[in-house]
Length: 133
Image (cartoon, rainbow, N blue to C red; front, side, top):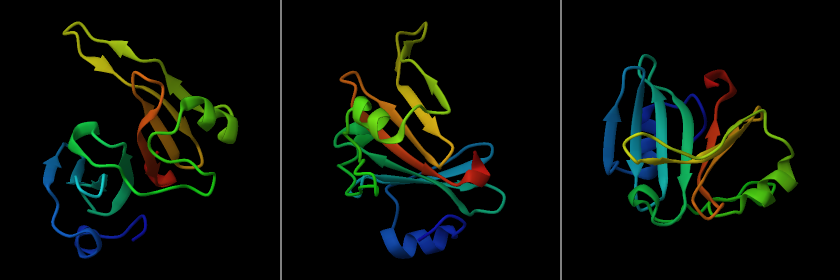
C-alpha cells in the first residue's frame, strides 16, 4: 500500500472499513481496530494521507506503526521536536465558541504531521503525500 493506490487496493490490505465519510474533495475510510484512517482524493480516488491513532482517540485502537525516527501515536511532543526539529507549520490548541477543544498540531514538509492531546502526546500521527500538501 502506497500513496496513489486506489480505494480497492487499500480494502484488499485492511478489509472492509468501519466508516466511510465523504466531503467536498475527500473520501475518508476508517479502520477502528487497526487505528487507521485513509484519505482519498474524491476525483481520482487515490490515497493521499494516512492517519494513525493513539488508543481510544476517535474510537480507534492503537495503531501499530513506528517511523524510522522511532515516532508513533502517543509519543510526547518534545520527543517529536527533538527528533525532527522545528516544524514548517504549527498551531496551538484552542477552544471554539461552542466549547469544543481543538488539538495543537505540527507539520513537516517531509510528509509527517502530529496532533497533540491535552497531555502533550500525539493523539494522531499523519503521513501525507507531498503532492497533497
